[in-house]
Length: 90
Image 1 (cartoon, rainbow, N blue to C red):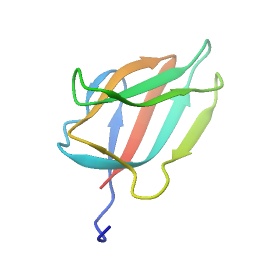
Image 2: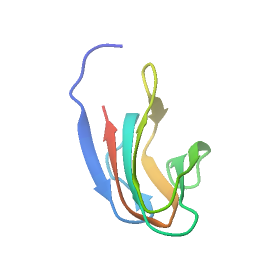
Image 3: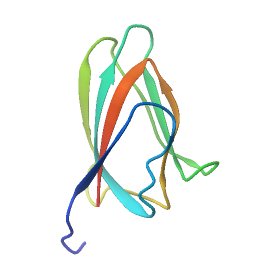
Image 4: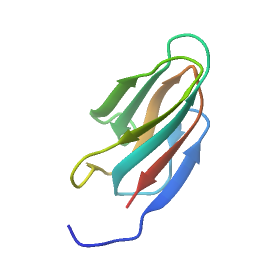
């Protein structure tokens, strides 16, 4: 993969990151109590590309191997017990 600048988008709920086509490289997540879970799809209504469970009341860093996950749009379809998340993409 050719070198490109890594960018970041912070979200506090569900919906589009509004960045268009991208490769997800890393995700930072801040969770609350309960059963935290994050689901990201390939655009609104697209296939699930990432579905993760987390420990409660903590911060988490998820590194995506190789060239990352290619999506037409980064869309958070579910963010249960998550205060905020930052998606790093290129």
